[in-house]
Image (cartoon, rainbow, N blue to C red; front, side, top):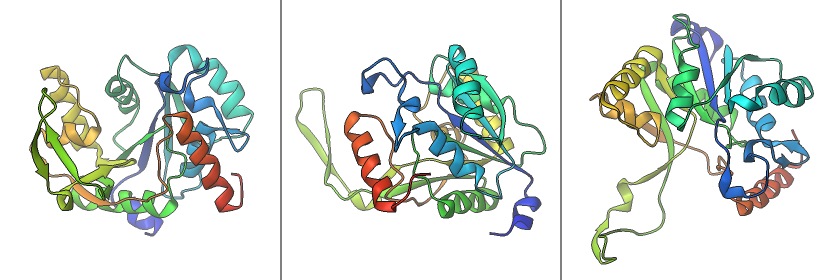
Length: 241
């Protein structure tokens, strides 16, 4: 995708949602600040988008009390210069993304939302999401499920075996035309609805969401085991970003 293509759909803003505490990791530090290859995990994430020429601005959402630390020990120390704003997160992820969305403007034709704990997003995937969002208005990447998936009731008894050929494990970045995402958040706010991702908010407005193939290495670091896998992926790449 050429930079001129992005220009026809407006600028591209990325909301990096890193407002959580990462309690499943244990320890005293939120997972987004844990070292991966000797560098805080969130730095890897931010650099992926900083290196993409199609991205116009990055809006980083972190816990409010972390903002001074993030400015001094993350952005300044590791020279992450593309950050347009650092803002405080909310009670839930959806509240944090809403705070980031409020900092976008009319010139931001496309808005991407990315987990602050997915450090291995690829340039090809970022560009594919931007392109698809410009074409369809709403897109999320995913990986087709390989395992058999069953639905069970509260009693633990299987009620149905689902067709895995139609099931996807969804990733980020998810991408939207800004007006589509604003409308989805407006309706969710009016209804008091909280979804598990941004695409689910758009879906309930009746707007179709396209799913595209994600990247196998685009894992989310959630547990200590994920962090070990992340170190392996870095070593396999043969470099530390």
